[in-house]
Amino acid sequence: MEYSHLAIFQNITNEEVESMIHCFRMRRACFEQGRTICTYGESAGEVGVLLRGQATLVRFDQAGTRTILEQVEAGSVFGEALAFTPELGDCVEVVSAGDSEVLFMEYAHLMKRCERACAHHSKLVENMFQLVTEHTRRLSRRVEVLSRRSIREKLQCYFRLCRLEAGADDFTLPFTLSALADYISTDRSAMMRELKKMRDEGLVQISGRSVTWRDGLTKYS
Image 1: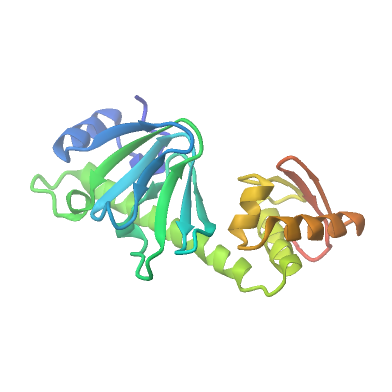
Image 2 (image 1 turned 90 degrees about the vertical axis):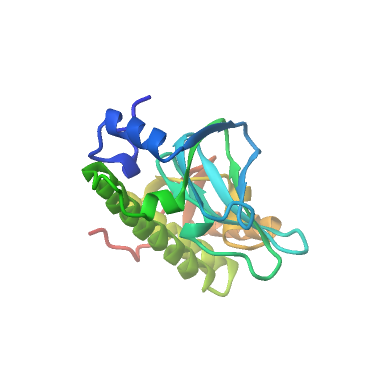
């Protein structure tokens, strides 16, 4: 397998990656759509690298309410050691959004000092910190969205962030509208009613996952 396209293995050769896989006793696993890749609280100390496919970080509260915390793209890393431990009885899972393949490694192997002082091990740690920084940035975006009071304000905030990232008025949502309702923590029917009002006002056009958002407030850098 070619690893160069994965951010965590950037500037590390395929041979060096294979060596680390053997040295760290990493394991591969494949998952079908809808399968749980890992559950936080049961996989402490383990980090996953999504080699291919997509996944979703989902929280279920004690009432069974589902909330999307984050979309996980190929090359991303996830794991309780990089995030948080549910303390209120909530269940946090990484769920495969299609056919996917994951490489699991022990966090302790990743962070402990390499006995051979391998340059590629140090580079792996450096890449990991960059990915954690990006992970923190995405969670900060979500806090920005959830801090808005109304459904419309949440949608406006999310669409502006997507537009800034795309650098254009037209962009593609990373998930379905049903999943968007989970992401902004609101009722789907209420969100669809608000989207219809916004369409009627000419603020937004949506076709599938394709969105055109024009409110005249965002300047591209």
